[in-house]
Length: 177
Image (tube, rainbow, N blue to C red; front, side, top):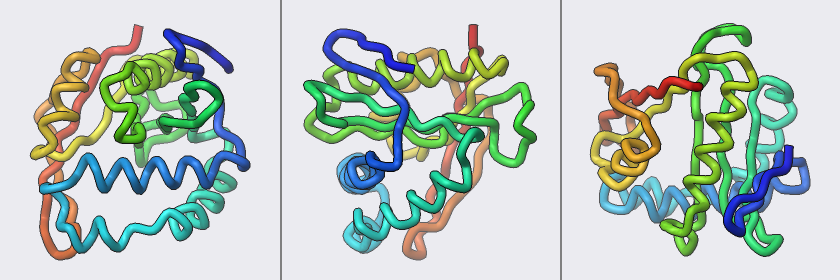
């Protein structure tokens, strides 16, 4: 799968992309969650450690999780991961957008929209009728982004602990055409 939209090229992730994806993930967390997730947690994130875990995860999830990359001028600037809803079998009707991160300097340029559209298409190709995701309740920027992308909260909530601080997460859902 290779698609191009307004200067953004979407393609599948390979093993060679792991370091770039880990950098995007760590920088994305540190930028997007500033003031939400404790600074000590964000400061402890390390792209090299993340890359080691990501290589292992990539091998274990092959065929189940679809990792999509966004490139601009040949440089990887965004990453999304989509697959069956967590805890559900591979043939579940619901898909999940596990992750969507863009380098901070590319936020607002259309990269996130292109990745989201590709994740929705991939979910449809896999025969799923809905795409769900979890977002931190205090992340108003991401919530607005997902609202504009056709997602809406469905009332489900959970909480996750970050450096001893519980943070509320909301589940969003979107029908897949």
